[in-house]
Amino acid sequence: MLQLNHISKSFGGVAALRDVSFALTRGEIHGLVGENGAGKSTLMKIIAGVHHDYQGTLTLDGTLRSFASTRDARAAGIGMVHQELSSIRALTVAENVYLGAQPVTRFGAIDWRAMQRGAREHLARLGIDVDPRAKLGALSLGLQQLVEVARVLFSGARIIILDEPTSALSPPEVERLFAVLRRLRDADHSLIFISHFLDDVLAICDRVTVFRNSRAVATARATDISKAWLIENMIGAGHDALEESYTEDRQLPPVPRTPVVLKASSLGLAGAFRDVSLTVHAGEVLGVYGFMGSGQLELVHSLVGKLPADSGQLAVDGRPVRLRSTTQARRAGIALVPESRRSMLFGEEPVFKNVTISMLRSIGALLVHPAAERAIAERQAEQLAIRPPDVNLPLRTLSGGNQQKVALARWLTRLPRVLLLSEPTRGMDVGAKDDVTKIVRGLRQQGIGIVVASTEPETVLSLADRIMVMRKGSVVHEFAAEAVSKDRLLAAA
Ligand SMILES: Nc1ncnc2c1ncn2[C@@H]1O[C@H](COP(=O)(O)OP(=O)(O)O)[C@@H](O)[C@H]1O
Ligand SMILES: [Mg+2]
Picture 1 (tube, rainbow, N blue to C red):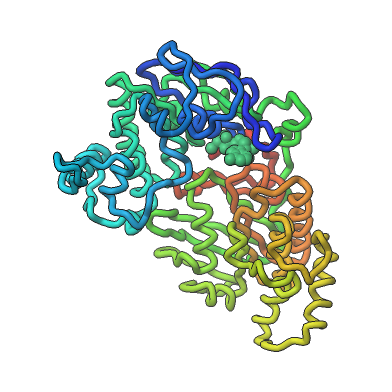
Picture 2: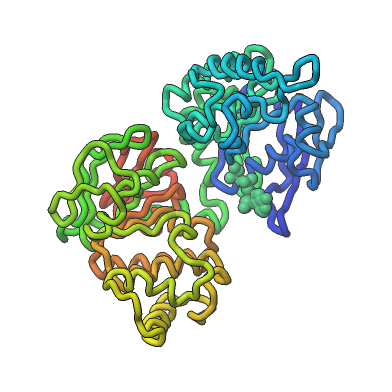
């Protein structure tokens, strides 16, 4: 039905797709898997008319096509649910279900009643009972995601692309979605399903294509393959030097005999994670790994009081604590460097102010001689190899990697007992990643307990002494004092 041949696409000289060929048949669910950055979304955006500037050909029903816009692709029967939510939170549920395609009355006005009735019906088919007049922004992330899925599923498209549609869904929501996908397939629609949940992919898909390093490396029938086969193809078996560093074993050290600085017992937060127990020793880095939506990011936000847990206990240095706010967490000695650097740093302020600000807060000093402040920051900047090494520059002029180092540097001026790092190296180049690794090792040597939560296997493999794996809100495995590799980590998740 749909055939792409020899597709290549690059962004500013960086290849996103290299000579990819892909075929979709009528009435199949075709899974796409591959690590972040492998090129899956880019290929789908070519099919959906988002990107038009590429090499290669696209054939639909035997006719050579080239879509000039998403509208063009929609007119040809192609609908896509994007990885990034594109719904509008300020609009109602019904308006979002009909975004860009509102029904009209015979007088040409928008038919609100038809819209509300239709939206209610569509959502009921996905098992959702929400008021179509409710503002989308008032719903949970999972429901927002389903509203977006509903828009495309019931738009009349015969080729439907779902790019990681289940990351924010609960297991029953996923089951209901899958039932609808099967019905659409049985009605001769063709679906492309992208997901990191390999068990789900094997369960719902007829065929699966694996992407690696901008290439489609293998396609097989789901019944002929296993999760291990998928992982092997996703990460490569160490065929080239780049992949080797990821596939070899890493020996995790024995658990240290130092005191436990952070202990969580059966911590839970409805809709995010449940029954999480963990310990972090002084001078130890605990990695928490899981795919997007597995609850590990919510967990660290809970450990710092931002998303207070609703069950379980927490203790710092053996003393029970209840964290209802970040202020309480800071007093208890727990600090977080969050995934979004912007929320913690002040871009317009010079680097030195950003470095010293937590120290100033902690000693309650409102006025410190700027020269002294600069001197402290200069020492830190030198230690951390912040580039350029001029602490007077506004922070926003630094690269993302260097901004991240500034975020970490603040905690070097006053050590917390427990430092939580959420996605500490996401989007960084190799050099900046190495620097962050060095900083984390330095902090560990000073005896603080560190928790690194990430969706990137390389991040936990390079930083952690012990690794906890989360899946869909629960801890499913722990690697300690043993050899671990990327494929074992992926298999556990
Ligand atoms: N709009 C864009 N501009 C620049 N680079 C991009 C853009 N979209 C994707 N890329 C790059 O192309 C590569 C493939 O990305 P993507 O298709 O999103 O991968 P996947 O969906 O498999 O995670 C990555 O290196 C990504 O950074
Ligand atoms: Mg993607």
